[in-house]
Length: 209
Image 1 (cartoon, rainbow, N blue to C red):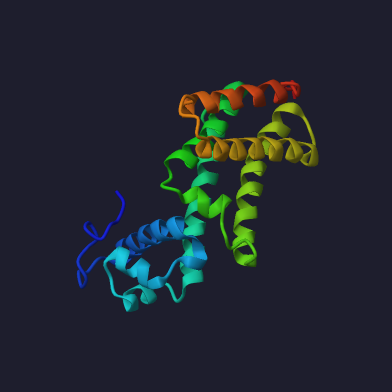
Image 2 (cartoon, rainbow, N blue to C red):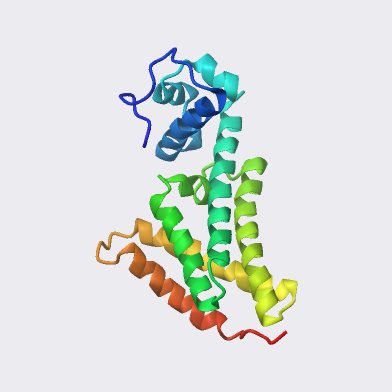
């Protein structure tokens, strides 16, 4: 449930530290997604969370630290989702589909968190760039391990194929979300891309070893 001025806890209400941190991150996500990093203000985030600015600074010393903490959460979510998809089945066709669908689910249902990862307006900041690059690398590495084990390709070959699959998934998912075509449902779009990906990757069949 999103935090709004109407639903945010009243100022002065006490929460356990972890609960307060989660509340602040939720409010920050809404503000950063809506306004971007540069236009977002700590005052706006504090107001959205229903706390004073000193309370916000008790948890995060500055706007960049808050943004990085939120980015870490968002990056971890998509990497975990891809790993879960790869572990969900031993059937490689289904694995490809599950991985593509994981990206579409993330883009469609993560309350705009994907914008922090894939459409950040702060990629010139090295700490942000490192996290954004880590998402692609971690997702591709997870895929490449499966490709290498099943097709007998070396690490470099597997990573090239895996990066291609990850790029196809995340770029097409973002395009689908931004499209004005309402007739193509999320499941249909993900299935189309999964079919394309499978037709390509099945050219590297599972080896007996």
